[in-house]
Length: 150
Image 1 (cartoon, rainbow, N blue to C red):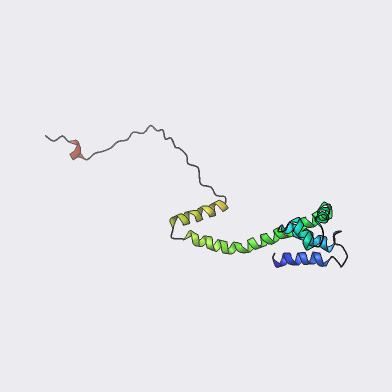
Image 2: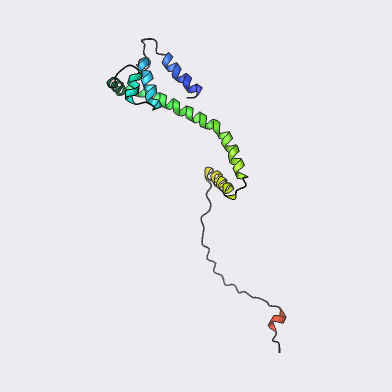
């Protein structure tokens, strides 16, 4: 988790005074909500880490405040991911620019397609063109080819 997100979590937990509550939740409930949002542990593992039972964690999950805390933690983690991806964008563009000048024609073609796709520029569909005209084609041949030799 990026520092900004880390401080968000710390602030939420610090706001829970010893024995106090935040959003109607205890410090342990806030920790459980964070762990659930992170998605790395099972409910049993979360209960063990918090010295409680799976049944207790299951009861917490029924509370609206608890579900809201999970949503808040999840939203903050998504923001962190977006910030990280956005910070990678300039380097990704530099690398894509290099690929546009690659030695391999296929690599260049793929890079071009990628740029155009991201700009939502699609190639024109192939179209059959049926040309009907009343045109006469006259072919002039050199005289030496048209005269009969005797």
